[in-house]
Image 1 (tube, rainbow, N blue to C red):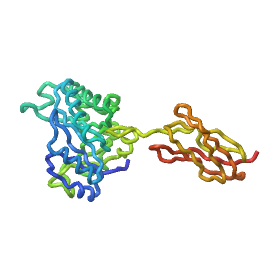
Image 2: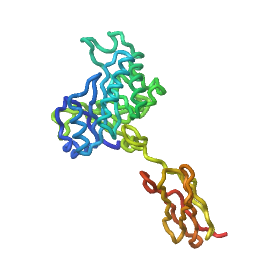
Image 3: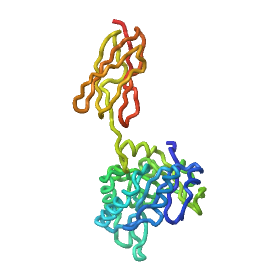
Image 4: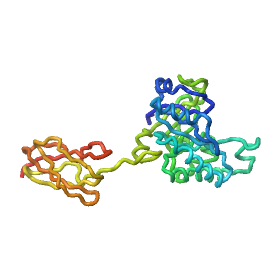
Length: 315
């Protein structure tokens, strides 16, 4: 699978990046650390503002340090409350769950927190953030993916979220995400020691396989309003005899328009009647036999699309 975009991820450790230079270097997106437990990253607001101003697509991530499901839900609530001031975001929001220490002791293993408990903690956070209308991805590395989160063994459990896969090969294209995870990782973090113009010192670099801005906007997530949908009850090729009349129905918001691609072949006459979300139109075939044209539909928030083709045929 080819990559759609490349980007970086940053936190306060990168200081104050010059995102205009990052953009000029060919990077398309940045994922910004927003929250850590119940605190906000010191550079998050500036990073998000400046990255957007530079024309980069922006996502954010939360570093979770919850020790149980109750704390995970508290952190999800804090994340949701914090992120609202930065919406909309055209890249996913991510849950970063990995090894850290609590009072000098490892989070996983010797503290007695099992992999099952960690999965429950992650799922509690994910469920709350998904329910709030966000596109969520899970950040993980190979060790945790296989041995703690068990992504490959539990496809149904993790099927609700995308994967942001940390795999430091130096080349995103050689990462065998499907083989290792049992599924495609939408984002590959392929180095943590890269040099990118506009960033002082080393920085994480990422490659994305999907057009996240288009997906997120179309689904009305991350603060975007879901665009209206217009449906035509006719598609394909409509065969009509010359001077024949056909009634078309469209469903959608008020203000839908239907036009002919060539009024010498077919004309459109509004029926001036609306039932709930339905409008009606008369299509009249006026062209010579063998001629054809497209019938196009558009409306508020919906770009014009060809609903069907009228082809004039003999008796």
